[in-house]
Length: 120
Image (cartoon, rainbow, N blue to C red; front, side):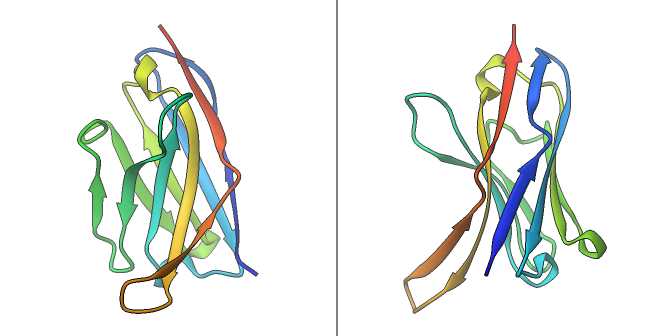
């Protein structure tokens, strides 16, 4: 059974930093793509950062240059380092991974999320 557990959220002032962690069980983060999403109140969930099984990272335009996704294979954990945080970064942050179940279909796995609040 795949389980993803996020931690590291909290309240931070604008311009501050946080590091989120996502620890997986029943899943090998070194062999699979991993991602971070976020959902702000009243808004749809959006992709923030992605790291492929080969280690290539991609970011949304809104966070590029401020956020860094990485993984520690020994700890089976994925991180999201967030710097120069802005009030608009306030959201619940979710860890995500998936498997392809067909040519065009996939099954997603989600953590329960961790709240990040950035005060102005």
